[in-house]
Length: 604
Image 1 (cartoon, rainbow, N blue to C red):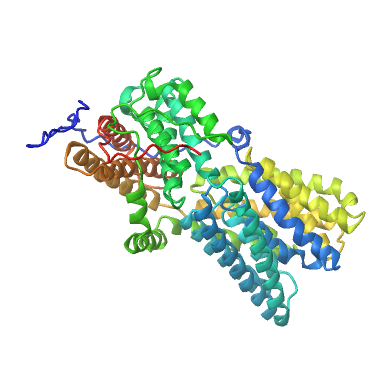
Image 2 (image 1 turned 180 degrees about the vertical axis):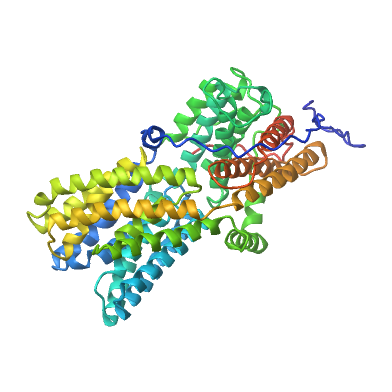
């Protein structure tokens, strides 16, 4: 397609290449992923930001812990810890969005704790306490999934609210305990936002760097051009052909970068440069041409390294086929911030929570599994059934296959963790200060290790959770270890049994809706890309919408493929829709602009 500007007068309509009609492909049985313990327990590289939640939770916990130590009230640590753990959330969000998200996390933590404390003060019935704990776990699970807050998502909320249910409580104590949680949560809010004083565009820079790295990987090994796979068939991204997998990862990373920039607040010179870099990453993955221009993997990796650093953001040249190097997203940001945009966001959230939501079966699994685990442990005489509730709640992931993997990871991690607890318990009882230091150490270790694999992080989480009980007084080590082992095994078994009994047939329906949304987004992108009178912002927004729909389609397909009991999935239609979507992105890659000229803006 030509890049010459449209001359005044009669518009010259530039048609996009005609895409071939995709035939109706037969449906295949749902692809069930193998349950390999080795793959579930395999270690991954550490997250590029593992140290941020690790350091944040240590700082947010140290000040309240040491304050309570100084006044001799370490028995209140469970309430201050509830607020301090809020520092674990929101580290991938830009600071403007993080401030609002963390405020919601703190209020949600206080609300769940309030329900637990009031219930504990009004009744001593174990059956009622378990029922309330299971209901809270289900509500927390669906709200965290709908708002996509996390990691660690609902597990921390469930841990705090379930533990508080079985702690002795009086009504007159509740206001003071909630005030302590709220104060610690406010301090955690400050800790999580403090880096903005030093590097206010840090989250955006990391998101754009990930997009550049993913685009570099795609450009280095793009596979079949423009998303055309070989023969249609079931999904099988083998090591011999990582091209489709690389494209999907690049699309997800670019989409995440755009979302981060949209949520980042007012434009700054650094964010302007980051927008240009995302344009380069998008141009590299939609129509990769190794070694040429923006698709040069080494250049993309060099930009990513500079973007992650503390120096100026690199200033890239214009992307191939562009009439201007500047592509702002101010118009789209303004739409999202307008009253109608906020209403649309609220409606989308309500749809995710509505009667037809695919999240509801997972919420029912959580309710049933947590209740079953709690009642089973109570029937066997376990003194702390809330551990079983938390174990069951932690299992429930997007689908049954991932839940099975989490059951293995949780069981192994907890069993190893009790051995670590047995070794460190004598040291923790040397003095109250030693106990506080041990808890802070394991809090840091948990966040440092959990990004490698959940089971490895659980090895540190388990002794920390057991040591918290020591703040209220010493307990027999054998009793603590025995209860924790029994609760872990029973909670994992009961939780996974509930997951297999409560089917999620709505996962296939989510795939159908994602397919329809992708078809609509592709048609809109083709229409605006071929229209010379379409506004540049409209064309860019259509492209981003198509990229977002492809990411949602892949997520829906992967989720449905991991469910064991459901109707047949349209596997080949899904593949065909993905290929057509990537072909459209490639065909419109050279129709970005022209835009209004903007002044040249430096990176710093």
